[in-house]
Image (cartoon, rainbow, N blue to C red):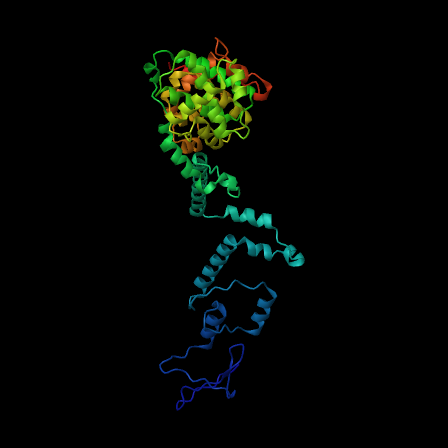
Length: 437
């Protein structure tokens, strides 16, 4: 190979260069060098070009023999580094970098395996296992920390879900009879106005001829009459409310007390029932102790004394709402009504508002069935009473449950000892609620 000497008059003109890097004299091509560039020996240029890796904007020119040898081998991993004259250091760095790349990227070794080249198949399990082993420590720590955060969020979400209040009206949104749009306002009004339907807990002190024991006998008898006439549940609660409100403001002699009870039931039937019993039926059940005129005269007296105010929220009104909040089944419902009907007979329970009686009856029934204290956040939200606020009333209910089948006043116990009411009276009371006494 020959290189034409440079012309002193034209120092920037050199011969053309072939693909092996040989410069032919008079090859027809011209390359004009930039001023100030020093020309180096051809061997130095070939060494730098062939040995150095590819670099942006630099042409990697190699001899044909070396290019053929390279084509037969696997293509090297392209690495962009500047050209250096130290070929030994460059080669050492290149080999070290290749080994690092092979360690960090096992996927390339899988691709370059003969089995993969022949069948074009990647072993995903081997790749995943090798990848897991080569994850840096700080990445493993980060992943472990993120997993722990996810677990903590799941636990927090479980706690929130346990304490969340259930929307008990969500399933009734398409039921026009449920009046979901107004139901909360209605019960806020009931809670606000329930005191207007209550009586002083010591009103019997104003009666000179009757006492609380006579009241209990009357109500126990009316519960049996209500059961035999198969009246609505609302009728019983309104009947007792009318009796107490009338006795709280009007003096009654002993022999007229049963007449007050019969007349109060007649008024409650006219307010609640679709089919109202006739006056003669009520006279018959009272063993004809009163005449038709006496019943109608007492009706006028009671309705005027109460000023026609019959629309009062009784315990039954709250029972229905609170049972829905407790997501009750038939057993819980029957036991709750059994407990609250036991309270209707007891004069001392007049000190509790109707909403408290309803909530405490459901709470006591839940404790009786489960054998432990049961009061959910949903029940507390819709009743507006905590467990502590119900304990006093609930313990009295348990004591009434204990003695339900004893003594002379057993009307409620007999009623709930039938198959129609699921033999609820046979359930053992929640005695553990009395342990603090």
